[in-house]
Image (tube, rainbow, N blue to C red):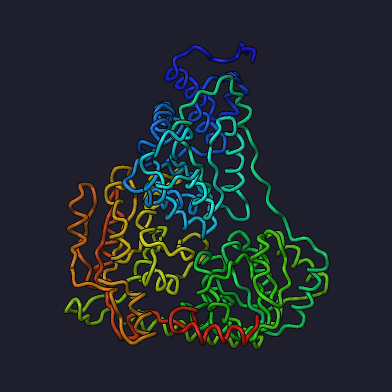
Length: 636
């Protein structure tokens, strides 16, 4: 190929990299640097640098990393680009934590990040944690070291089998994956990654496997224009084909309408509120979208499912028409498909065809939720459908159940402590402690993250969000350790916020690295360790099913405040014994410029006032036979 005069051939690689990084820093972006002439169009570079440049062009400037021998070249590129102020690199102590932090950042603020790992165990840890963004529809880049392409012999930490691209096969089962076997394929890899992580209707993880010997390979006369790509377009409203008219007819026939909201409904608040009034419906919300319908709204029946509510499950079980908006129909959300006992018809709005066709008796509207709802509302108005007068029978019935649920919760908030045999004394109940912390978070504009297990289920039953984004609960993967790691997002973000991590003792001990990394990077938040010395959600399930709990608790007492105090820079607060002390310690935590931890011993036992209870069915354990039989009897 004829040498182009605009290349920077001949310069030492590190010096050329720094000059390119400074050019981007001075012009605020790759496209701007090219347009201004600060960067030549053709450059000599390495695969790793071209990858970083491509990610910068896509708006990825934050890298959460656990470097290893599988990513030393990427690390060197990022060192130079961080020196120039173009990217930020956050080194952490666990790939699980790296993934959770990047996920929380995308979820709360919309900012993009890439997770960087070495080959082998590190990549597999990131794969495991990526179940969270895969389940909750969040786009995250994963840059993963991989075995070399020349097959000179087994690479340390590769899967020990004589077979090609085993990591690609493994990661491809989770989602979109690509092995950068050939340097010239980089632009295609970047495009596929963009289409995955920035898919408007539902983002997802993208796993880019980077053979160790390919990363440093030189790309001569590389055209930077190949890195400039546009974002994928939104899917738009569902096509008509008579589907909207069918939906209108179903609404006109129905007497008891329920709108079920999932993650795809998060951007359609105004349309949902209008539709609720227009068709005289009530709503239930998945924990991931609490607040889309304000908690105090009279048509909000809160949550439904196997860990639902009195009002939510009443609405599910008595509706004759269900309008599903952006929901995957997770097993606990619809009681393993037995939640809608009397539904004669489903209108299912979803950009994903499989999700839209999930139920029988379905009118599918395959498209983006907000645009599709707008067209459905327009079609209803054309048929002269008007909001129901005040005092409809359906709303009145549901309102009585909502009142009963409010009274049910109030009893549990009043019983703030109970005697616990494991602690040998009175300790806080989870309902009282979680309610106190959530009320404090709402008053102080803190973002709450919920870990898996008992604290998570109690949390979304208690939460009273008036807007979306006040709480984040990983109910898709229920990944233990997510909440504490999510606090690192407060340090990653360009949009500062204060975070509360609601963790069980089991979840916290699975991912305690935030104590160190939170101090290192300046996290602003507080870890609440709800300690009942067991996996209470599973203990409770075992007892409900078989009458005994087994191997889900221990006899080891841990002083979590002392553990936190051992890390210099963490504000370790003493164990709480009452709600007044908890509120006072939350105030102390907020006044501290950094990371705090509050240890909260909590009750576990048979007293019903110690938890929020369960109200539905679930296809698990010895419940399966009856649940499955009921599902087939319903036939939905």
